Image (cartoon, rainbow, N blue to C red; front, top):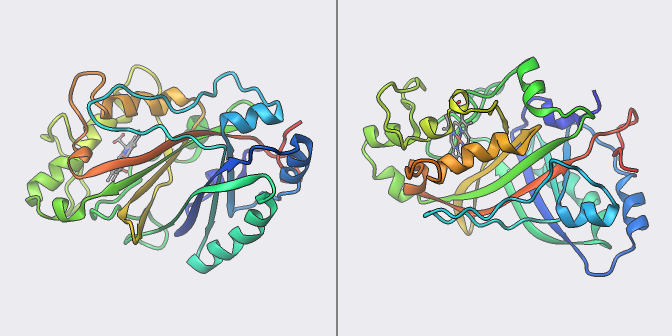
Length: 287
Ligand code: HEM
């Protein structure tokens, strides 16, 4: 399969999320040749934004930028020209592996965002948890279902990246029932609640309840640094509508009910990127 290998492979516990913007004057063919030297393995994922695709002459009919949603909650559509996710089993290794890539990109790009994510709780082989304590990833599609949700006809896919900042002091002040109703699952055993309010996150995002196929593959990681704490949400899907129907319902655009996540968390940035396929020798398949 010619999808970038790290996309479908099992999660790793540490990952550096990086968004870059193009410098104003660059040579497009030098840039393309440079990007083609990168070897794709289980550590790196790369996605292109609109401006970069224009520069490289790549046209993908189904790609679009993250929309500016007309919602009562703030969902900044911040975009970005290039996304790189570098992951590993140790934080130092993710950081060190990022260095040669950043050096390679430096003549062409400026760093716009860099956030180090980490796995919180969970078994070595299982999903990690959000900093609220709830397991994140339970309802991810597996095996062939994941392939169907993610991989486009030519091995490409789309990635959605959205950084959220939690007010954990506020969340930790909720009663246990309110916490469970906010997420839609019981913290003690991760069971989905039958009686959760319509605003619960799981009810808002329930993949089986949309008019279209809405399974997506989520690979989010918590973050914590001098600016606060939260989650870098990252998901992959073969069609951006899959993500967008969920986001729109979370934002209250379908029925006026906003996702309860917004009672303690806010969106800092959001972007969509196109992840090109790779050649058999694991270099980017871009012509
Ligand atoms: C603060 C940000 C977020 C947090 C803390 C969060 C956390 C969670 C948790 C704890 C679950 C339940 C367990 C699971 O199935 O993984 C869940 C489910 C889910 N989330 Fe999120 N999430 C966030 C943002 C998003 C966003 C932005 C989307 C997509 C637009 C999304 C889509 C989903 C989906 C599809 C499910 C599974 C629903 C189902 O089919 O049962 N989440 N999330």
